[in-house]
Amino acid sequence: MNIDDRHDEAPSAPRAPEPSANGRAPVDLRIERAMRLVRGATVNGVRMSARLWANYPVHRWDGAKVTHHRAVVIVGGFAGSAGFYTYLRDSYEAAGIRRVAIMPPVDNAFADIRASAERLASMVHLLGGEVDIVGHSEGGLMARWFVKELGGDEVVRHVVTLATPNRGLPVRIEDYPWLERSATARRLHQLVDSVANRTVLPMAGVALRQMLRGSEFMESLGVDVPPGETQFLAVRSRWDGVIPYSAADLPAADNVANVSLTEGPRYGNHASIASTSPQAFRAAMSFIRRS
Image (tube, rainbow, N blue to C red; front, top):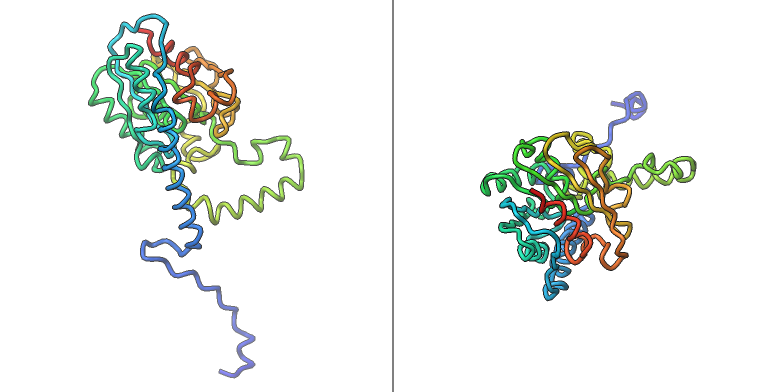
């Protein structure tokens, strides 16, 4: 072939990156390592925070006596571990709940929310009889999926969601109408979204992507809870710091109640809502103590 003939050839397509041993393209390994470090630090941070209230006296319950024999299942949230919820478990037991179980989500709740919901279904089956479920953060979505998709409506009397992104985490620009009107904000969002889709989101846990508003999981779950015998209570706080206040409530329905905490940042933050917040504890106990 003559050199001049090369001009008549179609330009060759860029070579696709060689897949790695696990079948994935070699995305920037530095980002992947960084995400692993962040993930490990998050889990360890949650465990350390649990130690801060290990010496707290359990919550006092001065309300009506618990007369039913239902078990309460506490379902942990993103990056959570069973140890994080022992304070809440001890408080429920001291208040008269006879059986309290903590369900650690699959892979510290980084895995598919549906897989954790299936584990929840198995635990409820082992406990036998009717139960009440208290789900913190992502754990509330697991409880809702169990009730809606896995037959939980037949055995769950009450579901309490503590600081749960019931409406999905708002990350799309259309979730912020006041920003969407700005051409500069739209261009900036497109740039950030493009970078995130190529780097951070592929490395993030499945559950985190599922919690985003507009995800396939959130669209399947829906915002409204199914009608029926199961009663729902959503507890939220303006001082959460993790879950936006506007994302943590449930739409009004005959079997739905919403509570907004007024305790300020000390007890209204994301971790305290599932531990040291007296107001959150009283709201949940008042709800689940009912026959």
